[in-house]
Length: 532
Image 1 (tube, rainbow, N blue to C red):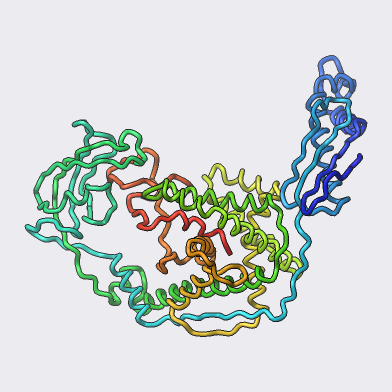
Image 2 (cartoon, rainbow, N blue to C red):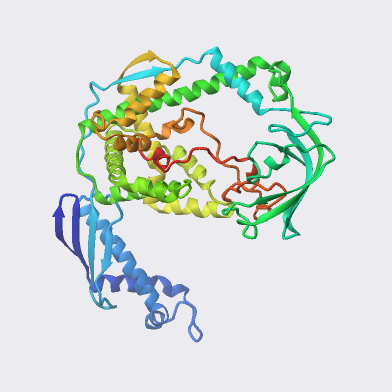
């Protein structure tokens, strides 16, 4: 085998690799010898089939396997002999006109990882901002739970108002013909909840028990049922009862209705949840400081292919979010104008990722086999049951896929290691002050300076939302739960005329009608998990 280097510029490498025809033929002959004892052919005793007949029967397949194995071994030898650390999968192409019996000439191009020296950890200083959880905050959390457990009481002779609950039957019709999934009995509808298609709940205002009325609504253009998209429909309503919100008393009895021992246990649970949320924010703020210090002290070339791959992930998120804006074209134009900022964010992410990896390796940080198994099982849950094992097998057999799955946890472990090594000073602040500190970090450059252009600062701020910020949104509110999934495909237009059914993924046993769309959906929010 002959290996000749043709390019060595920066992080780019290129080689020509020649695999002699005799080496490939030797592999084929070896496989024929291995197969011979098992081959059965009419007219020959078991194991006595001539080699030339075996090659005639299986020759093309044997040659293809031998060629692929030779190429794989050649790549392993190339990487080992030249001490290469490929940034991405090498690009390998077989010369045109290759045919059996000839030498295989390969063109190999790749980018390698830069040589990085793990920095000294001496002098690393961080400030930890702690937020004590006040009794008022606990009261607010408990009251929020109570508001979500709202009960309703019958109100004789009352005309339904906004916030009331209406118990009714309804039958949906298109052009006077009842359609499948548009019928319900004894349905409880809260006016103003936003759970049903636009215009449905509002037309129940003024209804009284025993009343019958017909309403007209228009299904959204993106409604999941094809036969209902954008269509005008009527619903014949029969009102059975109108109920008004009852007063919820927060006491031991209320807590017991939630399955708890009493109010004290509920308050302790709420306090623990608030402490967990603020701890997440504190870690985000510390990680921001840490990464900014690392980024400010290191500026080395990074593989363009890695930057492009990272940027494409960011860009796809942005494009997806822009498509769900009220004005998609304006949203796309906005992110297009800031494209260079997002590319810089991708470059910073790659550089920090490589630096953290080097620090981790130099200090013995690792993801254990048990941790990797847990990651694999968690990731597999995103797929349908019949596809999960296929995903697990794929990751186990593909080093690149395994590395991609491992990377976020590995980086988090390195960050935790660095925080433990740092000199940490602590200061008590309010939640608002902590959030402001996080936002201030998000506005800065990697060197700590501020953007001179407000527009760029806004782009940076949105893009630098951290994975650790998973419990909060940019509005400092608890992160909303994911939209619930539709029960099944044939229920997308079922009894509750839901505003929108969520896409079916792994969980098909929940009802999309309960999920209100978020009021704020910005393309920039898609970059929330692309930085730090």
